[in-house]
Length: 166
Image (cartoon, rainbow, N blue to C red; front, top):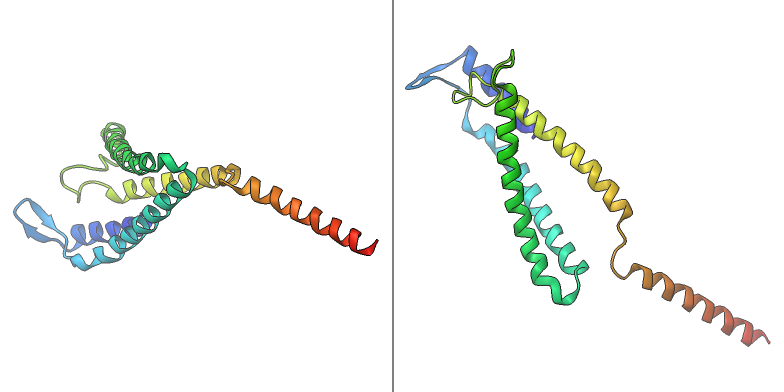
């Protein structure tokens, strides 16, 4: 989102300083190829997140609940779409009467889409912090048994050593 904000800031600056006349106002003279870095980063992030999340669900859910795990993944995507719509509505309501103007108007050259991208980046950083807290507290399925088994094996090994010395 930070890359998107930088690109949008550059696009808006070019649209206001070196505009190309268009049917509905000024058009930015910036090439569309500037979208490639931000869309590539977003695509890679989505791919890695999706694979990791589905793998986590399938490994950590009980065997008979794995289909529910898959459906929870897609319910999470649907829920995030609703939250995205809510965020856009809140930004519209909040910035409508602001001194800087609406961040997301019909004419993007009059708005501040870059501020919106910075807001999403800040929310992502908060989400990362929350994830790190939850990940620190989480106990993976089977780790308690593995530790107990390791202690048992160590005790049996020590007992065998003591028996062999006697």
